[in-house]
Amino acid sequence: MKELTEPEIRASFVNCSKGEAKRLAVPRDLAERPWSDLDFVGWRDPGAPDRSYLVAERDGRLIGVALRFPSRQRGYLHRSMCSLCLTTHPGDDVSLMTARRTGPAGREGNSVGAYMCTDLACSLYVRGKKEAVPGGRLIESLTVEEQIARTRSNLFAFLGRL
Image (cartoon, rainbow, N blue to C red; front, top):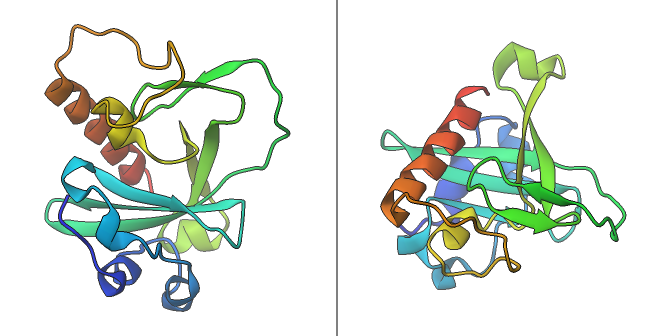
């Protein structure tokens, strides 16, 4: 993914108003992000613990999505799998992220959801740049490039439902 600027990020949001996009918290560390290793840029809102944001490039166009996820109590002993990168995490490190749909459906309160890595670091897990807990990444016969393509396909399927 190419390096993005704050104005590009704010202009990309498809499921919130321009005013909401103007007010959302954009990461301050954009210059330090590993852009060449990212299929999308994702971050949590430090001022609103139930909100995250994701921006991806598809067909030469940026698509930004505001996400919400429920806060849960820590301490669960289960493991969950991210539906984008297929990384498993313990406890609440995978969350059901919901996004308001675009257009009239979104204004009526309709949303779509997917289980995602809570830290939205899917691209880094797939590339081995960020370590998941032991056993978090399955041993696969697919190449890293094929796993990247699958992650992007899963992401685009989610975005397509908006």
